[in-house]
Image 1 (cartoon, rainbow, N blue to C red):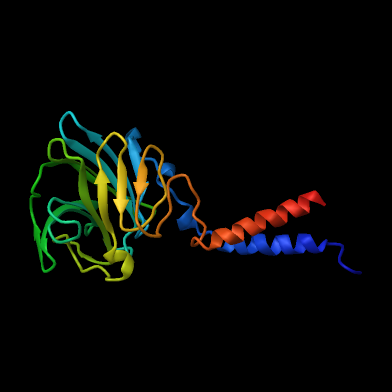
Image 2 (spheres, rainbow, N blue to C red):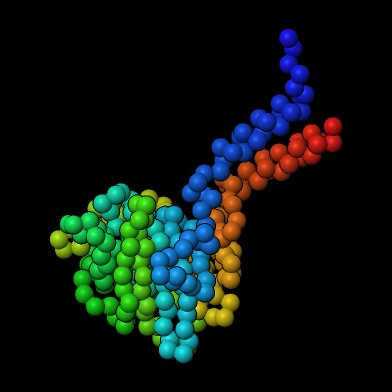
Length: 249
């Protein structure tokens, strides 16, 4: 018996199936879907463009403090994640770092590291005040909480984030991270103004309550579903046209 399916229906199903393959769970995740224990809330959030990382933050101009929650998965289950402010440069050298890892008993912990150069990582106090530091580990993901002191009337800060695959659980000293392109591009500028923004070296979407400014193609945004690369938007448009034709039949 010949199939009764209309040719347009067959084409439509094929396009929709292809479109579904282009949407990964990681691409669908956004910072606005994330919640924290004890009803912790932040004024802004951003889907960072590399390393499947997210930043939530609130800037308090009255005491020049920045409260953050940094969310990321380590490169491997026993690895580490880190978020940093670099007071002098835009990249890693000079970064004042908060690094989360699991201790020998499996509990999450945070170390402070001064990355004075690419060859020198010094555990110890940061060059600015930091308080309310803690970490959580759930669903293979770390969250670093902290409040840091920023210069009075600062318009922005340089941020750096990173993930690694291994750490010395006794000392909390990290093994080197990969040098793949995403690892080398994980830095940017966080604006602290009324219309807070994250400016990175790759395009991101615009999270609720923030504007995100960039200069090349990159990660997804808050509340928006990123579909593969920019070229795949053409496939999405064609699918909509096919569906429209099908409905008109």
